[in-house]
Image (cartoon, rainbow, N blue to C red; front, side, top):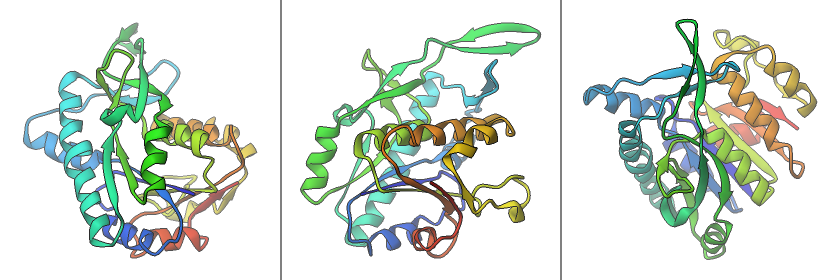
Length: 263
């Protein structure tokens, strides 16, 4: 069993990823982003993204109601269905689902984000939440009958409202339920870089015990991503491969040792 996380960057080679996946002889679940597409469409319709930093140092996109509308258009709509289309073109019998569909991923809405602005601590409440449960029965039903789930935000909260969430947190919850042998995360970089601006700072291998120390060395969204990586190892043993999603054969490269392996 594999979990495949496809980043939402503009240069991710989705066609190459799906072609590689079509050659695999095992079950997998795809979880994808669409942040570049969200920003591109948002600019066309006059939407301005707002990024806030919590008092604990984690960056996140502030999710107003119009943000959720935009995510339904781009994540659950255009990007999800284009991936499903590519899957079918390559012989993968895919089913596209947002967290809303069949309540496949349920979340608890955040009570608020504590931020510092103009010297004051403010509590901002938006449509965002933490994934808390997976409808494993639905996903098993699909997998056992030859279908490949293709998942995206938004999720559904405890009051049946659509909410935004972090894909890294959803991935950790999927791993908790499915105990995947390998998790492949395809991004717009050669792998985990000590310096995000220096491709030569690639770290080839990281032990799970080194992740906590690394979290203290980084800032912003990377800090949140390392925290989510640590959560992947809270259940059964697994191998996480962070690799370049821009190459001609991203999945093949990841499985052949390119990128960063965490075990």
